[in-house]
Length: 212
Image 1 (cartoon, helix red, strand yellow):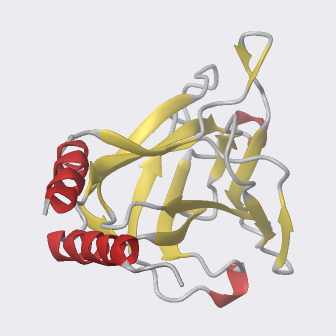
Image 2: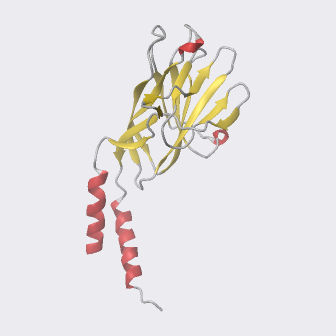
Image 3: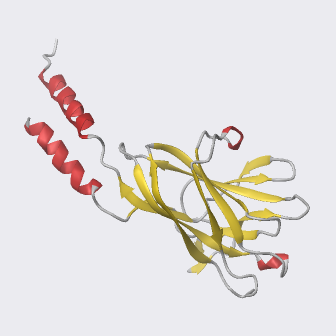
């Protein structure tokens, strides 16, 4: 039984910490400054534009309880005074292809810099996703224009899996070659105690098994 007690004591305290970081790929920097490169999230009146998808994974056995998801970006003022910094984000289980996604798990609207302030730079905008529990597995965040005048510059992340762009006019999907700046905060959900006990018993049984 000593082996079981050791496993439980080593796992539970870490799982009970609040406000942990599930995923944070930072913001890409060049020479100490924020790189002026980004993934477009647009929905122009003529039907053209881009959706952007950012994959991430939950590797803890018990999963995660998500509190907030933050996005680093700005309104793309290069598209004129009628453009806005509004985007709609949706969360899906990630199948590895944007063509095989199921129903969205959760969603929220994100508003970047005010359209009347063209000099506002990129900022972190954090949205609440409280009450969202994610089991261990792969997921993807989809960002799309909230309306036909959405022109958003979702900036590059420093690390992490590459974002995927989808051109709305023809549905073409392609790797962006860089991640999108996003961070997810929440709390690790402790794995069921029974699974830890069974794992420890199985390990102990293997150790007692005679070598033939």
